[in-house]
Image: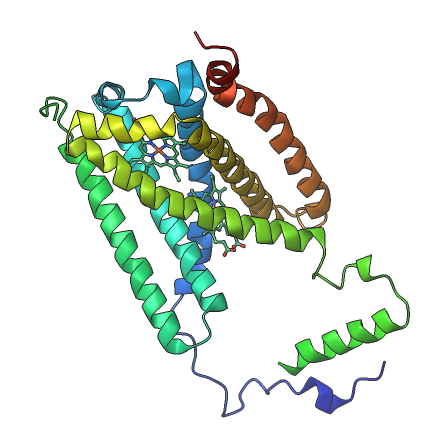
Length: 141
Length: 148
Ligand code: HEM
Ligand code: HEM
């Protein structure tokens, strides 16, 4: 098919209307982060699911004493803390992109993102506090 | 930009002249698109689950009884079945995520994206069959076999 020069009207590199150079590499970093966090989450989340649902008795053996036993070890505390932050930031960043894709009005987009960021902050703070302040001797009820 | 539009016009023309829609120009309706749709759905689902999951785990700071009560619901037959669904969703997202990463970084990734899709579906089935068995074994035997 014949392509006329007009059909390929790319701006000349130094044309004056060219938009200002990007000032932020945020989207690049977020792309890289999705991939690195994804690889770490393979081990953390699939390991967690295997331990919780398959290993000796699976979900039926979970109770307060079980959690107390696990969180007496810095290894599992670190595991859960890393998993919390990586999954929350990875999933939250994914949702941010999805909001950009589907929200049509700027105000809808703005409020959905505010809702997302507040939810992420609440979960990150609460989850982190729970791991660090866990008390195995808390009264039974 | 106009370059994209002209590519689309060319693709449209070749489609009308009878070239196969499977020839790689069209993404819509391709297995590659469905793998992406599923990736998106499973990611969102996991995110929402995590929200509830951190709230229920936080009950360990309220009292052992409060936590044990909410964990009891995880052991009921219906929720147990939902857990199989969650595990299936997370497993698909993880496997497809690895596939996406390979397409991006492995020099032959783009060439093998289709066979890699069949491969992860195969791995998913092979893991989910024993996985489902072990996750539901006790619930099923309590429901139908009188339990032990
Ligand atoms: C049905 C499946 C699941 C069960 C039965 C389960 C069970 C548990 C249990 C018992 C804990 C308490 C801490 C511990 O013992 O290590 C916990 C914590 C945690 N789980 Fe899961 N989990 C499941 C799925 C998931 C998934 C899919 C994710 C990630 C997306 C996840 C992320 C976390 C995180 C981040 C914590 C730490 C919470 C905190 O900081 O307070 N879990 N889970
Ligand atoms: C288990 C290991 C995981 C791997 C290997 C993984 C991998 C990925 C990758 C590579 C992407 C980017 C896709 C793209 O740019 O096209 C992505 C997107 C996403 N992930 Fe994950 N992920 C994992 C776990 C999780 C978890 C635990 C959550 C939820 C808390 C999650 C939620 C999402 C969401 C919402 C998106 C955005 C989807 C989209 O834009 O279509 N992922 N994941």
